[in-house]
Structures are given as structure tokens and as C-alpha cells.
Image (cartoon, rainbow, N blue to C red):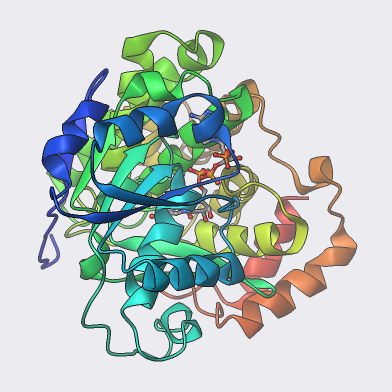
Length: 385
Ligand code: NZQ
Ligand code: ZN
């Protein structure tokens, strides 16, 4: 097992009708900025319930944070937070609202230009303060509710940032708030959580037995409840399991002490930035292709995945690996998500543009061993057509 430090300060409040807990979780004298997306939180009454739970606190609102939240939108929220003297941010939404809120938390207290935060991975900046954050989750998918990262869209790219100051202080996970999600977003949530898990599990053997068994538990649970929760949105237990799996897939637990990959995410980000394909759908396109191209490098963990997640024990090693990739693809397709670029209208003629974008964004050495060069990414994209 590799060395690691693990820190996660987020309180999880899980279950039905827990929004009233906000009265205890948000400081009584807080000046709160409520952040939400394009209107679902308003339409389905979640925002009203949140405002009611906040009682007499001073509350301002900022709506309109779009999926794949844009830097320009978030900078408007930063202005609001400064003008209104806000000292607590409450995100009500999915990954986009939560990620946007994390960015706003840092940018409001950052004296320089907000763009510096987006570029902080390549050019580190000193971030010493952030507004405190709480979240009310309406879409189980990203794990943003219990991690310190965010992904922000700016110009033609998606930028990943992270900072320990933006772990939410608390996150309310009420599975009933997800009952209103359209099937395509639930399929996205299942697939995003699935890929977060495999990007930390189908890597290289590292004797992380707890991490592996936990990852396998998440994957098997997602496979077990996937169809049920898609077909019966009000099955509370199925939704509750999806929600808790999604949180644990990316709260640092299964990734501590083991190699991580993330190349599927990085290539996928270019597909979202260039063609507007939903985040999780880009992952469903790239992952089977990436495993096909890198079956040799990932042999040991792919065989373990085949046996322990899909119960594939018959046939040669190559056959078992091919069958595991096939089962994964079928699982995504059965959730209604296409796994080929062509299904999204993206043809071979766009691969050069995608490779250029990866190069511009510094994604030239991806994967657990940094051996996914642009040439390997090209082969992955060609395999995904
Ligand atoms: O905007 P509204 O009207 O709220 O509608 C949203 C949005 O259109 C809708 N929705 C959310 N909750 C709903 C609902 N509709 C009905 N009922 C509800 N209860 O769902 C749509 C998608 O929302 P979004 O927040 O964009 O989805 P998701 O949670 O999948 O987040 C995707 C974003 O998270 C980033 C992605 O890159 C992408 O920008 N990620 C963040 C990560 C992190 N912070 O750790 C990791 C992930 O890998 C991911 O990259
Ligand atoms: Zn993701």
C-alpha cells in the first residue's frame, strides 16, 4: 500500500426530511447566499423548504448556475457575495452547483483574479481563506458533497481545482430530493460514480485490500440497483444506495494509498468542452475504449475486476478481460447511455481537434504511470468511434 494522509471534515446528514437540520448546521447569525441551478430546486419546492429551515437568517439568492458551471457566471455570484457581505454559502443542487459554490467560496476571499484559481494546478497560487460551505444534494453523482474538488468551464476548457478549505462543512443527503430527476440524469449519476470508482481501482495492484474490496462493493451495488432506481424513481432504498455509493466513490476513501488513473475523466472533459456531451456520457464513451487499448498495462486489475465484479472466471485471460469490458459497456447501454462517439455525431475528423485540445490543456502524460501520451489518447478516441 502506498503512503497517504487522509482528511475529510464533511458532516453527512443522511435520510428523508432532514432539511430542517439546517437550523442547527448553519450559524444562527450567518448571512447566507443560497446558490442553485437552472430552476429545478425552485420548481420542486426544495428551495422553499431550505428558506423555511433557515428561519430568520439573512438570505440572498443566486440562481442560474448552469451544468458544467461557467467561470463568468460564477464571477457574478462572487460580486453578489461581496456586495451582500455574505459569510456562508449554501449550495442546493448537483455537482455543478456544488462545484460552482466551492469556486465562489475561494474567489470571494481571493484578492487576485479568479482565473488564477482555475489555473492553480499548473501555477499554484496562495489561497488562504474561503467562505464556509454547506450543501443540499439533489443529484447523486459527483461526490462533490464530500470532497475538496471542483470542475469549472472557461473558454474552451474544463479546469479542475481543489483546496482543503472547500470541503463542505456539511452535506444533507435526502434521497427523496432525487425522485424528480429525469432518467438520463440518474443514468449519468450511476455512471459517474462507477467511473470514479474504477479510475481508482482498475489501475495497478498495490495491496490495498480494503480499498479494492470497498471499490468492488460500490461497483456491485451500482450494478445491483442501477436498473431498479432508473425504472422506479421512488424506490427509496435503491436511491439511498445510489446516493451513498456516489458519495463514497469520490470522498478520498477508496483512493487513499492506491494508484489512481483519471485519464478517462481528462479525455472526457474535452468531449464536454467541445461538443457539450454530459460529463458522465463522455466517461461511458471513453472507459471501454481506454481499457481495450490499455488491456496489457491494466491486465492484473482488469482480471480482478472481471472476477470479483462480474463473476467472470471462465476462458483465457484475454477472453475474461474482453468479457468484462463488454459487460461494462452493456451495463451503460442498458441504462440508456450510448457508448460510442458516433452516437453523439462525433466522427473521426474531429479527433485531431480533440488531440490539440488535450495538448493545449497539458494533458500529454495521463494515467497511473503517466504513459498515456497524445498518441495513446488518439488510439483511445479512435477505438471509441
Ligand atoms: O440546473 P437545474 O435546473 O437544477 O437542473 C439540473 C441540471 O440540468 C438537474 N437537476 C439537478 N437536481 C435535480 C435536477 N432535475 C430534477 N430534479 C432534481 N432533483 O440536473 C442537471 C444536471 O446537473 P449537474 O449538477 O450539472 O449534474 P452533475 O451532478 O452530474 O454534475 C456534473 C458536474 O460535476 C463535475 C462535472 O465535470 C460537471 O461539471 N464533476 C465534479 C466532480 C467533483 N467535484 O469532485 C467530479 C466529477 O468527476 C465531475 O467531473
Ligand atoms: Zn466524474
